[in-house]
Every structure is written in structure tokens, then in C-alpha cells.
Image (cartoon, rainbow, N blue to C red):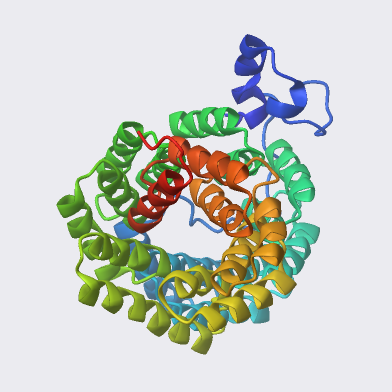
Length: 446
């Protein structure tokens, strides 16, 4: 059965809204039908059957692969699949030590079958997970040279271009991936590329179409969580909870859905439930994002000792990440700026900016400069962080605080008001400080 591309999935929306084709319809794929309804060309070589495996399914899949490889140690396909599965396990568990296991499995696959595209795509995934996005792009391109229809390589190429700040190229890569291999991995990345441009309407519709087509529990959990996260960033907390609930019905252990649900609960004022949810998440996945979110909930409640404990764990995670070849500078720069060593925050943010120039690194550098008292310089980066139209309340809050520091009160009121109108619960601490700053500027905080 033919798989339907993003192109056809949003065509009706494009007509109904009378939007331009460049804003909604995938372009540049060629062919008379524009990619709609096109059958996916057969992949070169054996497929690596990892898709849809997350949570418990992923763990069971890894054990099954290990058993098979004990019996068939020269099965290069299973070695490649195992390597990529380790990457997913490392991400969901917050355990970067698994990247070394992924390296060994992928190296073994390539020893048995040099140039095997799935193993090269696995190397791209490992590089991306370690935040070596130039390496990820290089490995993804090598995999696509062997098999132009490899779904994992097509998806990782988009990821790498996004994380390098090459948004125009990422958009073209998403168009190409949609034409070659439409499916859940491509749809979710296509949606994020659109969201980075501020086109949340198309992002939401593409994700909804992806969810309609998802059948594996892991895919349902993944896409429903993406919809929940998108809704949370737009301040739509009930919608976020609805999607997170759907994700958790598909996979009750899916940590990104548990984290998203906790953040939405916190934004609605359900602090106790949010704390309980985030404690569950960080107990199994001690990553900087949920650790800082939990710490800020404690801080907002006045429990500074517990808050500091969470912030210290970010430093512990960063040390473990570095020991396993992961570059944690972007993850730690904002945490350090708000809750740690301000000089270290600036060092990390500058280092990350030199590696990749994205809206996220621009925002991190702007905020690190601000907390170090370098506001005129910070403002340039804050403006760059908000230049694409990406609807992220924290970026607007940071820009507003920097504008206030340089004395541009009118601009500060606009930015802070915009942050709180977009997502009034974007951060327990940040939202409180935004309201206090806006009040001091004579703005409306109702």
C-alpha cells in the first residue's frame, strides 16, 4: 500500500485556508502527482526493523537482538539495528554510556558489510545524539549515497541541518525526505521545521496526520507527545494534557509524555502532581531539562535545598555526558546561567555558538551575556533568537529582560507581554520574574 506524503496530507488544509503553497505544501519533489500517493521505492539492502520500538517494546527488542546475535554473530543487519536501538535507549534513559555500546555494534556491522547504509545511518544517529551535528550530517550523507531512500538517514540529515542552524537547507531536506520516504519520522521533522518558522498551524496539522497514520504503540506515543509539547509551548494546557494522555495510553512508560504532562500540570497550577510526575521522570531519566523544571518548581515553592539538589545533578549529568563523548554545552549553559556558575554559562554558550548557530544557541548566548552584565552585546543575540518567528515564550522573556536592562522599556513591555500571552506557565521561576518585571515597567499583568 502506498504511503501518503505530507504533501497530500496538508493539501486540503492549504486549499481551505488559501495559504501559499510554500507555507503548507511540500515543494520541489518533482513528478506529475507532486508526491501524493506515491509508492515508496524499495530500500537498498535488508531493512533494519527498529521503527515503532520505544519504552518496553524497545527493551524487549534489544534483548531479542542480543539473543539473535549470540546465535548468528555475522548478522550485519541485526548489529546495525542493535546499534541504533542503543542510541534510542540512551536517549530515553538519559544514559550516555550506551553510546559506546552503539559504537561497538555499528562498527561490527560495518566490519561485516562495509558501506552498509543502515549502519552508516546508525553512526549518524550516534553523532547527533552526542551533539556532533557536522559528523551526523557527514554520516547521513554517506548512508544516503548508498541508499537514497533510507528513512533513518533522511531523518537524521534533517535533524543535523536544523541543529546546525541551516534552516533553509533543513526545509529542502524535509521536502526531499517527504518525496522519497514519507512516514512518521519524516512527518515529525517536517512539522518541527515549520514550527521553527513560526508556522504552528501547519506543524499541528502535519502531526495530526502523522498520528492518524500511526499504528505501532511507540509511534503513537511519539507523535502524540510531539503534539502535546507543541500545545504546551503555545500555552494550550488542556490540549497538551489530552495529547499526553493519548501518548501514555499507548505507552504508559514513555518518559517524554510524562514530562510534558507534568509541565502542563505545573502551568495549570497543579504543583503537587507536577512535582510527583517530574520526580518520576528524573528518577529514570536525569536529563537537564526535567531536572531544571523540577528544581524550579521546588524553588517557586520556597524549597531551595531541594531545588539546589536538582541543579547540582545537572552538573553530574554533564560530567557523565562528557566522559561518553557527548557535548553538553547547550544543555548546561542556560542551567548554569540561571542556577549555577555564570562565568561557566558564558564559556559554554560561546563554545556552542562557535559550533552551531541556531535560535537556541543564540538564546543561550544572549542570556549568558545578560547574567554576566553584557547587555548591549546580549541584545544582538536575543534578537537573532527571535528572528525566525519560532514561538517560544522563554526566548521572548529573555529578550524582554535584556531590553529592560539596556533601558528600552517600551520594547521590554512588548516582549514580556508577548511571552506571558503565549505561554504564561513557561517556567515557574521565569514566568514569575517576567510578571514582576512587567509590573515594574507599568505593563498589564492581569
